Length: 500
Ligand code: NAP
Image (cartoon, rainbow, N blue to C red; front, side, top):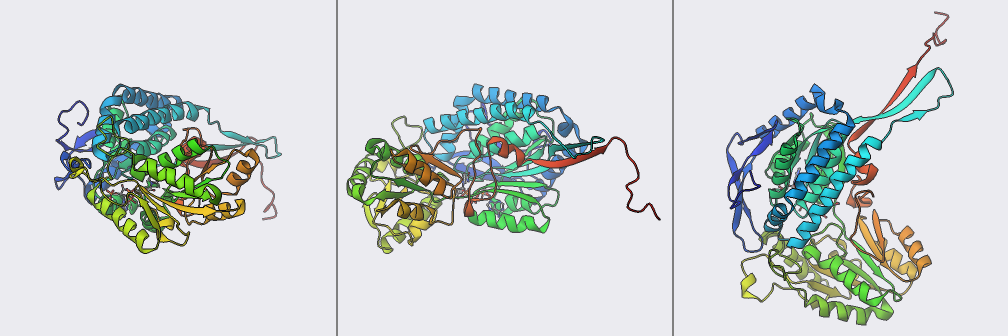
């Protein structure tokens, strides 16, 4: 158990068929607090045998038919009970998320509120998602299109929004009538363990939700190459997504991929200056840039660029970096030493590519932050779109700046990416705003805002940002098969072979 336990440092088991069980080989993994490098928990580490057992439990629960056949209103009631329990344990889970990921406590609270909203949204939506009657032109035929659960789902989530990303999968999968095996990132599994504890307390039948922990290379691979899995829903990096898609192709397993982004933020000269500066800073440096939709690519109109960038640099240098548990902190550490090393390599690359470093580009000087994986908000000016720091997802507090002079050039730059997850546009001219948002090839485009989403609107990417949609009705459809039922109420011989 992770909830109600103090300190967190205990071995956490796997959850299979409604029971907390130890991995066959007894493997464990230490979970570190990125703010100071200390161990905060020891969790179970599964291997391929444990994964196979969990998938078998999900398959048995699905085949038994109880959960898929449970009326959707009853499945929705389970989601409401989970939402209520999350609300009750809101502060405790926020603390766990902050200790595990490094994000500030207020960010963790926001995540949990969003997660609660998602469980409640799907509890409301699913019972209203009616079947469709189709007019065949034949009054003796009743033709219906109905939706059924897709089956056993493998749910794989990343480390940056562990609770949120896993909940975007579990809530629709549950209400659709699927059974599942969830795998959080090995780096940040704690809030998912807490969520599964609450799902257990809320009364999910055994085998419907199962939890395995461990590395992507072993546990993730064992989930994705198993022919008994009907759907893999994956959120993570593009390279891992490509590996999973190749593996899934072997068994024609359905795959939903929510991948990375390199998200442009277009600022026109007529934009409201103060709100634009504020939004660009928040878009780039919240959670130290470890956000799939982070606006890490500023594309600003030449006539205001010098002043705009100078103010950004001034304010970025004053962002208070520190431990997420400190209420004065505005952005926390990077998730690990290993990840900070990657970000540092990108900064070195930016310098070697000829971009102008105007702030940050180093670790904080404060000796109190030495043991954490902190990195200062960093801005590179005078970037070109052919630079790797402009094209590749650095997943750190690293903002690049490009300049444009015409609307057409701004759009070309905004679309000059293999990704297509999210983009922002800032202008006070509504018709230009509308033209530009329609021209941008990204799954979410914010006009005079940045970073917001709602459970009722689909989320997902164009291009290398993936092929699935989460949230909204489309997020429920990911977990459903579509069946056409043709019912002839007055069957007669068809007439093709009457002469035989
Ligand atoms: P990642 O390295 O691709 O890992 C994501 C998940 O996949 C983790 O649980 C990981 O396990 C697992 N995994 C790794 N290798 C695997 C394999 N061969 N087979 C199956 N599973 C495997 O991504 P990350 O570094 O955790 O997360 C950052 C990425 O996620 C960024 O690219 C970010 O943009 C993207 N992201 C996208 C969205 C979106 O909505 N589109 C949202 C959030 C994040 P381990 O961690 O245990 O290795």
